[in-house]
Structures are given as C-alpha cells and as structure tokens.
Image 1: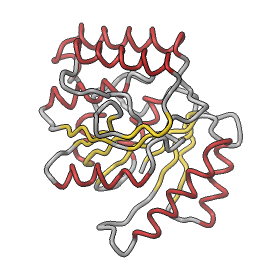
Image 2: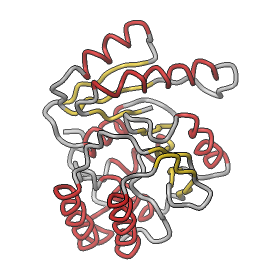
Image 3: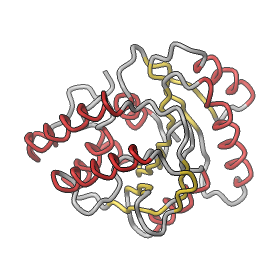
Length: 246
C-alpha cells in the first residue's frame, strides 16, 4: 500500500492506526502479506518523524523521504515503480475512502480487472460527508471534461483510492510524466492506451478537511495538463519516461 504525504502530521497517525488495525484483524483471511509505505513529498513538518516513530513498533510500515518537493504525481509514480508487492493500492493520507473499501476493489480484480478504481459519482456509492457544493460541482465538471477529451466511460478519475496489479502499474507509471495532480487521469489514459481493463467501483467516501488541492491554483494546471495529454496523442503518451523516479 502506498500513501503519498505532504505535511500530513496532523492527519496521518489515525490513518496509520486504522490501516494497521484493519489488516492485522484480517491476517487469517487475507490472501497475502501486506505492507504500507508512506512517501513524504519533501514534507517540512513532523510527517516523517511520525512515520518513523510508528514504524519502530509496526514493522509493516516504512517511510520513503523523497526530496525535494515534486508533487503528488511524482511520489505516487515513485511508489508504483519502487515498492515491491504483487498488488499496489494507492490511498490518500486522509482515508476519505475507508480502508475497508479495498474489499470492493479486490473483488473487481478477482473478476479479471488489472486496475480497479474507487468512484464517487456512481449511484451505488455512498457519500457519507459531501464536499462543499462548489468543490463537488467543479469536480464533476472537470470529470466531464476528462471524459470528453481523454477517458470516456469513467465517471471519476480523481478519487484517491486505486488498486493496480504490479506488472500493470510498472507498465503504466514508467510512461507517466506529470508530477502534479493530473497524474490520476494521466495514468488512466495510459492504461486505456495500453488496453488494460479498468474496473470503476462504487465506494463509501467522506470528505475530509485539509485537502492540498487549491482550486484556483491547481484547477487551471490540471486543465492545461489534460489538454497537453490530448495534444500529445497516443504515441507520445506511451513513450517511456527517461527516468520516472528522478
């Protein structure tokens, strides 16, 4: 499991404790060993010290301290390329999608998907705490643009809860080039370009305060990246990144 973190000292400990509680209670039934890697994106607060302290008594947890700050896309890409696991779950540090929802993604993988993604707009999903209306409205509008320009048939490219089979993750993220928040739709565009089946799965989700996405700053950047990916075309999108983790 990969958790990107940038200055998450205030929110991270409950997340680590809940994940540990969940997987530890499931060990007799869970079909494989598990581990959690927190990748700090150049955090300047106590995020890294917190993870190191937690890992001392919980050996399944570890830290990668990435320097300098490069963006969420970069540290997720680094995790997908460096962490050794048969399946790689990426989850946001706030656990807006509860860790229990991995069962739904895992069920989709068992049915043949190699990429399973949580999706908030599906009618079967449960939004226990909704985003402020303006964030939800702009998010839905942006997803419509993503569908029009790049990834048809997927309602939610931006949910921070995605499961990849390792070989597929390597195939996708070795070609990804965006360091910012646009990495979500970039990875799914490339997955589609490569012909990897994607399962969109309804989940429980609760808005958490403290999002690092600033709409007026990051929205235009994401739109620019979306247009850039479209203009590149399939051939350029599928070119290997010279060094995806550097």
